[in-house]
Length: 353
Image (cartoon, rainbow, N blue to C red; front, top):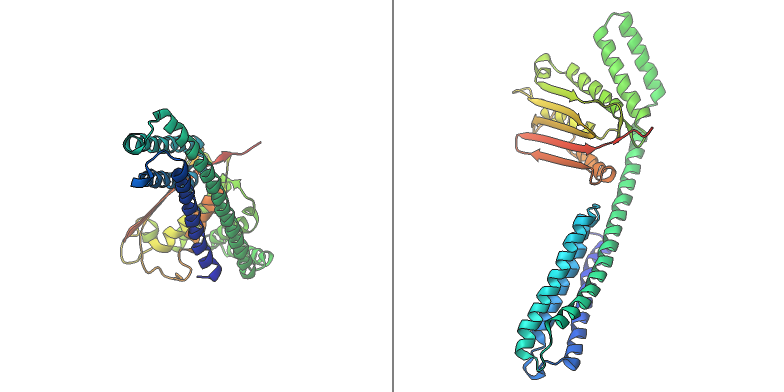
């Protein structure tokens, strides 16, 4: 671990400890000099301890759980409701303990319960305000760091892609020559493969550079990809692949290449020569919700797989989903010893005319 990271991990808890220690000492001094408790029997310590504990719970539960879990995901109503419940709950618990335990047993002067509630409302409001400021700032910094990391990863991936790609004009010219040769030789099967491959490469190189593409084009790309995969398989294995598409995909847009890693994974890990493959790929569109379901038995030693880079595509697509469809997608992955299943739902937006 780099020294800067170790320093940051160490310093932040120390700062929090100093702040809460200073808060406790301040309250202790104020109560010790101004309070109405009997000083000789140390009756000031119980209310100080539970008041500090409740303040810590209020501060960190709001900052480290409620804000990142609900506020940052734009669930504002639920966040406000839970925050109010937490706020009122800590105030009431603190007031009940102060009034019915400490004051009733140790105080030389009886105070109304309402005054205890009012005092705790004031102190807990200050704690909640500081907590909200801290939580929002911390959440913003984390989000900013994630965006910077994703941008850096994207640039790195694009650089590697540029280094690896062949001149597309040369490649397409070569494919056109091969297609013409296959047609001339009446080799329709080879011509069909070349045509599909050319379509795949044209889509990846030229049409998928936009942030969003027409969903129908993305589905056509997937169709061509699956058909090519089926053509390279033996008829026996190809017959075990179930592929179904339902829906009207014409008036919606989607982030390009967001579905294909899950489909590639089916063919990469699901093809087995020793037993039935049992692979399935279903794509459905209900209203504006796109659903992708894949299922395959796992071949734990897929042919041609580089273990060093295995899983990178799946990791990248998860990060893209979080970045491009926050609170607009649900991804469920069931990864068992011999079975791999995926269910992805994405809320899509219609094309703006």
